[in-house]
Structure formats: structure tokens, C-alpha cells
Image (tube, rainbow, N blue to C red; front, side, top):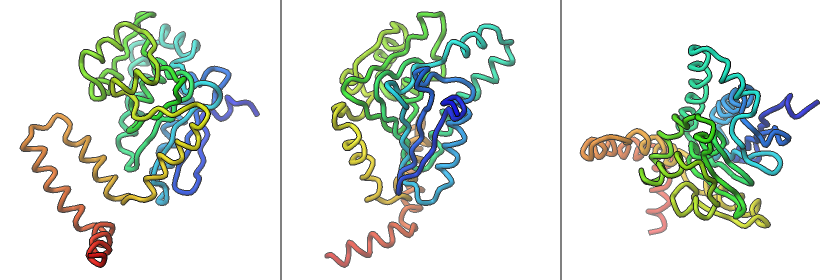
Length: 256
């Protein structure tokens, strides 16, 4: 059985759902099968009650090097309606990442370029090896990282977003962290252990509180200040009524 037979792998280890991009010979380049596989596995992770965090990583040396040559040929030969359908499938994947109630973490080794950098950017959190590289080289072939723009603009300043999207250059993991694209950079040698420690924190906090926080963070995007506060009031009340909060208050008051 070839890697192409299973372009995306899925496994659960205790409370962590592991999604692996599994086309190492193609540097995990995106194609239709991989986008479909990512969508399906995210739905699976979403339905697993015991899952507290999802980690997306790439097999082999790279996280994801964007679209492969065959996908680019398909784009160049497709009709308008076919290109719309193809683009919407990626849009729906980016939306789904926001809808998964638990944190979705991109664990980046090697290169995360073009659509691969977009995929990492779309995740709630990004951790990377110190040797990892990030970039949006689409403009070099006349392409526009159009949907990624909506995500990147919310991650970094507008001027940084413009610079990254229009110059088409790669940046280091450390620079990506400095501009706000990456949360944490770990050494290549200790990456697995530090990643496990990082995501392990989500076992120690309230799953319902994290889910409500994630929803609220995205729901208030673009709201006026007072409207965002009003929405916060609603979520505050909902949180107070959850089992996790009731038990947490009881534990805290007993300590007092």
C-alpha cells in the first residue's frame, strides 16, 4: 500500500487527536484527496468526546509545501465553476478548523509554504522547530493567497501581512514568532517532548471553558466594543452554568 492510498492519517493518543499529512515524497503538498482527508479527520476528532486537542503535523521532512504540480495543472485547465468548487473546499476546511471546539495545533517541522503555510496559519496555535521555514510564494507564479489573507490579517499586523503575501520570501521560525505567526519555537532535538508538554496543558484545564473561549474569540471578531462585551456577558453566564465551572467553584471554595 502506498502513501498516496492514505494521504492523511488519524490516530488518538489519550486526549490528543493526531492528524498527519502523509505524502512525504511530495513534501505533503496539498491536493483534493488531502483536503478531503483533512476535512474528514477533523470531523472525526470533533466527534470524539475524549479529545481535548488536535495536532496536525507532516510526515517526513516538511509540514506542507503547498499545492503539488498536478493540482496546479488542474487549476490552470479548470473552468470557472470548477475553480470555484475547488477553492470553496479549501475555504470550508479553514472554517471547519474554527468550528472544532478544541484547540487545533499545527506542529511544523521543515517547510510550511503557500497553502501549507495557510493551513498552519488557520490553526488556533502554531508551534515549530527552530529550523522550520514559512512563506507565501504564490505571487511568484501569478497566484494570490486570497483566502489565507483573511486569516493572516488576523494573526499579524496589516503591514506584515502585506509584506509576507506580496514579496513571496521565506522566513525563519523565529521571525515567524516575532511577527505573531508562530506561538512557540522549540529546538529540533527536543521538539517531540516539548510539543507533548505544550499540548498536555489542555488535559489540565476545562474542556468546556476552552471551547466557549474559542467560540467567543471568533464570534466577536469584527464586533463593536459594546457588542463584544454584551456577547461576553452571555458566554459568562453560560460558563457559570456548566458542570466544569460548578465543580471548579466547589473545589476552590473547599480550599478556602
